[in-house]
Length: 108
Image 1 (cartoon, rainbow, N blue to C red):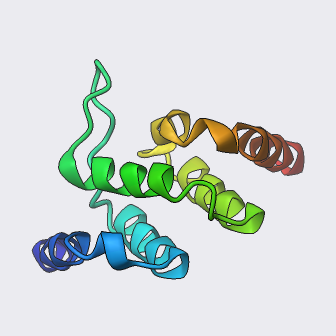
Image 2: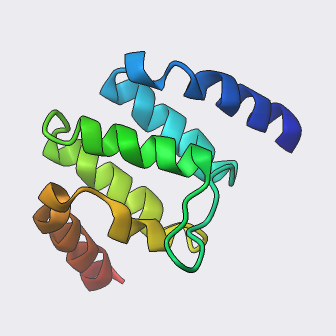
């Protein structure tokens, strides 16, 4: 099952440049829940799938709506495996990211 998910993610990765934001959010959701992304390694090295997702976010950062950024922050924050990727999100999202994390912590 994991191999099948990995193969699908590899195929979809080649079309990321043509993905809309909604498609990307669904792709990222599948990658996080399927634990397909590579974890951030000491020294900041990213695997190819993780790098591709973060590059998409950086390239399209000005086009994401606030609620879409919040969804990404929620997704990564609630994934213990990928929480470290929060620090790799675009700098222009910092305010929304911090507000969302503060909101999550306040509700806990």
